[in-house]
Length: 112
Length: 114
Image 1: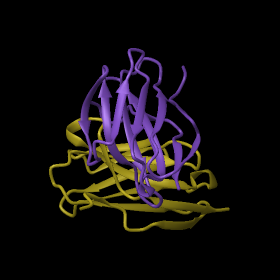
Image 2 (image 1 turned 30 degrees about the vertical axis):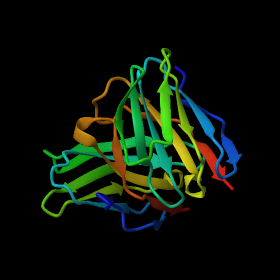
Image 3 (image 1 turned 120 degrees about the horizontal axis):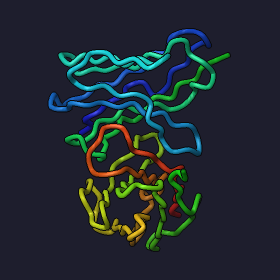
């Protein structure tokens, strides 16, 4: 049973436009959410996180929105750049630990 | 500061064999977690080692085992390999057990079981 779901395997966006990546979760007890980015032949790298006490967290071009009632979070990238092309995973830690549950990932392609 | 390194990069084994994968954690980190990423899936948590002891395990059978050494490097051992064990194996290091983002991943070992 998937506790973290990313239903879009892939997304293509023109350079300069907005990329929106979505993630749904099933457990309302989750209190922290993370996004990781993964390039081929590299390990995932932490991108941005959000606590359940917030509904938005922004870091430069990256913003994560959390809708607790819908159990949904989204990652917005504005403006998208070709270097953003990667697989993006949302993840939740078990009780604040480093034991992460990941979604299946969304492959973002930013077209120049 | 040295990042997380893993060896080997690629490995091919046959069904029934045993394999050992290695991970050197980032300098100053005392916790190592191992993940399995099958094709088209997200990483799945296997287990975690903290100060040389297993601290948490995911839904993996006992033929997946591990070790952490006094220098905090780690090994993942898989016995009686099955075809479904073919995957990218990632290790991640961190300091301590709790924290929400300070976890650093290595590039992974690609295991193919024939």
